[in-house]
Amino acid sequence: MNFIDNLNKRYATKAMNGEVVPQAKIDNILEAIRLAPTSSGLQPFEVFVITNKETKAQIREIAWNQPQVTDCSHLLVFAAWDNYTADRINFMFDLTNEVRGFKNEGWENYRQMLLTNYPKRDPETNFESAARQTYIALMAAIIQATYDGVDSTPMEGFEPAALDKILGLAEKNLRSTLLLPLGYRDAEKDWLVNLVKVRKPMDQLVTTIK
Image 1 (cartoon, rainbow, N blue to C red):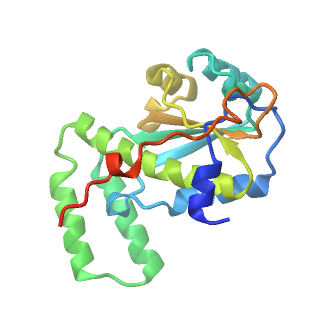
Image 2 (image 1 turned 90 degrees about the vertical axis):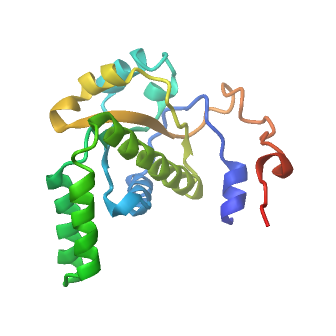
């Protein structure tokens, strides 16, 4: 099945049956997140994998009581950096140099440019920048899940401050941005499962400027 076929196949699953997703498939999804592109290669976020029933129940209470939160196998929480700091920027540049085994003058100049500009910006501006990167990683996770036959439901419908408190994210200098329940659909209870996918016609979505 090719990429477009997978996009046509997937949908935001509205009911899950609680069946456990094999760890190998979860590992594939997490690896897809790890390999997703991010601005300047900084990967300014972390992902929390929730399987604890009590924790999922707490999150459901502040996530509009959406049943997928508790009925899923694994609940992924994407949490972005609350700010860009020199330490965070340097860590990724140092890691790159270590893995590649050499330093590049252009790369080091780019490091200095980021160090000069990012840390002095307003923290909320930096958080919003980091938060946008989590959406790229989310899409990588969704597509890999579809390839592996795993259903998912991307969610913004929750109270971020309350979720941050449940997971102690402030102490980690992180803020939650997205939820992604992973599991298997309960077709008998899922009103969306057999409905035709609806998207804008191409001519109402894309404009070609020549």
